[in-house]
Image (cartoon, rainbow, N blue to C red; front, top):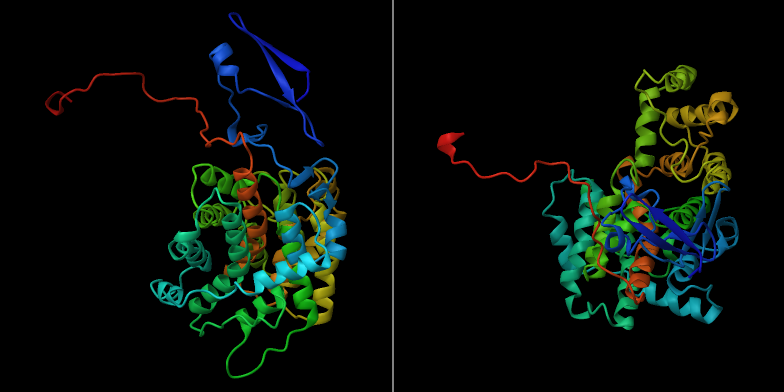
Length: 428
């Protein structure tokens, strides 16, 4: 903790607030004693300027376009690592050696199966239920299957829960999708690696083998790396908030899935495809760009700009190259992809977008890749959830290893009625 302080004064009170400094980023004003010293709380809608925890997992510098996982630049991990290795890094804090990674991969591989009762559980949903609804409920149901190993105070049980969640999330996601389209659920093929195994569970049919282009697994692995964690975003903060109550890891992660579902968060890439469908044809892109510049039009280009990154999203720089590689190697012909490429070209050249720093973000490109891989739009946010599980459970574990962690309990500015007396119905 820094010896520096910030003074806060009003007509009646004075407070010396210490600064809390991390290894990177701006110092934070410690307001834990503010109410006791002044009788005031702070007001920060959306917690945009509030640090609610200390974390050593992910660092973002939005002004410089920097994203670090455990200190490693996302560019290096995207180029040299794999999703499963990144998951290990997020959980353990260090990159694994060969023996460590082999053991971790073996653990994940041998926890991929789901209980047969989950298949019956899925049958309780309407046939056209959204896969996110099924995934959220299925993950929450794991706490019923593993209630005997839900001691949050036991490090071994926390680690086992992390392995289970990372291993079973693709299995449950694929099962939810296949149920929604009436296909038989496929069991995981443990002779395949993580991403390829998931694609087989998603697309393989009993009548014929699935022939995958290697670029599909490579692209999906890259997207999983880029989506694995992103500091204290809405869903991660939700996982931490729920976890702060002592809730088990499965319930906490299910809450994160629910938060991720929102179109302003994980549903953004799904919104991109809906926008492309609204534009309809590449020849309409110029008109769409003009409408986006008009504040009175009500039309918004989805997948451009970012709340945190004030310049180019570093993840978008990485995935842009993969997007064009996927489209080139798969030779996909799709009018919506033509719209996307024309829109990208227009935005990168248009002075309005450049001056407002509205560059294509990771949601824009991930939606294009999913579309090219024939992953249905309803599954886009599910794909995000598979990747983000590694970050969620890493934060959940970190929270339980933090000695001064407290239950989340935000304050409010009350704007309702002042105290008043009850009046009998006959007098109202």
